[in-house]
Figure (spheres, helix red, strand yellow):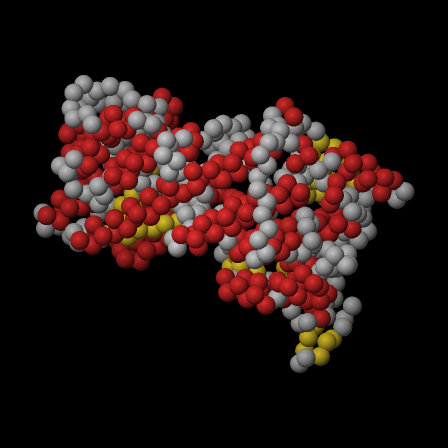
Length: 608
């Protein structure tokens, strides 16, 4: 659906589409004046800042506008600064961003500027590394979905912007309208021809906000005060700060360092220039997620790793993990070929390339935890904070729950690996040599439907219900005519932090013994075990999705498919053979309504 961009000030003169050639000083003065006019018009501002060069200049200009208004005796409203922490940022850039946030806090307090900083992060269900290792999704590569950007950045930012809106609305009361908030961003036409065309299509301007909302949605006003700045203008602004001619929240020394080390000498060459004719430079370094596969090569990371002093060698394991994942992405044996839904009419399921296979996911977990353990050892030896952490205990337990959901591993396999690596000293280094599979190696068009659901598929306790839960008065929940185990509900899928710690300390060994290799155990038992302790919360309305996936997972476990999930031919042969004698699988109707055991005054009332 096309986004319609409309002007916030309908009576303003139309803005010409070509870049207006003005001097650097004029552009800066105009940007400050435009932001001042927005504040005077009663607008409340959000600055979206990654603390890269463009958003840093945007933020500095916004602060300068506030300072000028304050000097004129005008009370300025709170400025909201929104920063995104994807949990996968280049660790050096992440450290730099935290330092800039501290500097911004100190500067705003010193100068009496009302600034509130919001750092948004993916929640547990949006954690990209957990999703990949947990078997929920695959990495985003060129040519496939950019789901990663939506999941780890766009969704958290949208959620946080709603929280900011709620704060502003409460402060303003009846004066608040849907057009009150304007978000300042650091986009520039000069960045690339594609960016320029996109900005023109959206009607973006350095002078007026535009509404980026889709038809029927609530207004989403944005403006880029630096839309007409060139790359040279940006570096000229930064040089004014580094040379001490302009005071703002940062001296940009770390920014200079990061760009120099990730993009070569281009930053330095510009910074030492002071005036003169403009010349184009190659300063397009992009700093993003250390495991991003949307680019063939992470040039900024590899430039850092190639630093002659080796000061960034500590990040090599992250780049090696990223490159290994890239090499296995198109490996047919590294995929789970069983679909995640069944045909409700005939109970059949598709055999097609899906998430990564159970074995590959286990390998990725071991490699990630080994990297973390080695970094933790460095931290202890040097008495310094760890420079990064890929997975905490909470994230590892979340992976266990995903493996339980998809019947990937025995109960609590992920936490047992965590224990073995962090407490028993096991290590799983990344392979030194491996095959790099190409797109042509994976036939994504391969797809066939085969029988899957049998007469047990819709059994009373084959989904989100456990007889143990109900006999222990765990309780049941009736939703749309179907009974489920009564699970805590919150705004998002989550695990209780204290509950995770207590489970690891006091229950994990017992659970591993109970569900040990001496018996055949459904992987879904891991989920039911944690539900009995109240550790897990589902997103409101998520019961049916978990029930559906648990039924598929329990079915594949019952048919012994786990070890051949990465072999489409074997899956087809086994499933067609299993159902050959019965004439096909069963229609996958909704689970029937069944009476449920109740617990009244400690007495079990069995009503089957």
